[in-house]
Amino acid sequence: IAAASIAEAVASTAIAAAASSREAATALTISAADIASTAIATNVPAVISGDPHFHGAHGDNFAFRGANNTVYALFSTQHLALNGLFVPRTFTMGLSCPRCSPRTVHGSFIEAVYVLARTAAERVLRAEYRAYEP
Image (cartoon, rainbow, N blue to C red; front, side, top):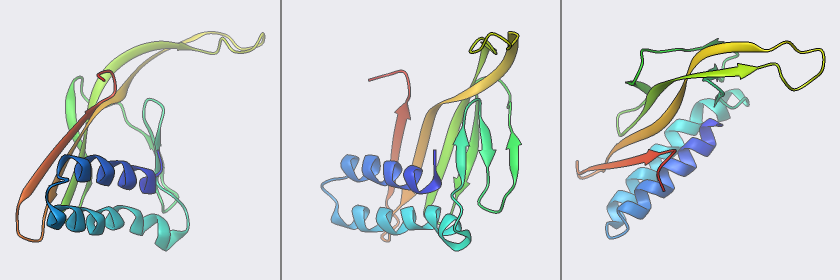
């Protein structure tokens, strides 16, 4: 997921949840820009993919297993926090080609995202997205 895409998704979700508050929508739009600012400044998007693999806007790459069923801070600014729930998953890789041998991976996936946004009037908006719930 690109940082700008996360910003758009977070802002859209939070704005929809706070549709009655013009002030909240304005504050969230500004905060969403904070997320994308690193990607824009370096012209390289920050990406989280797979189980999860992080690719930073400054060229740093790493995989993160995390403790089972634990929430970690993924992004934080003065007015916006994005946290993810890491859930353990065991899966098999390497079955996609005849020469690939199967490999069992004990990893984790981000299955829920929690957003906390603070408006200019210091109101707090919370939003939650769970990947396996409608």
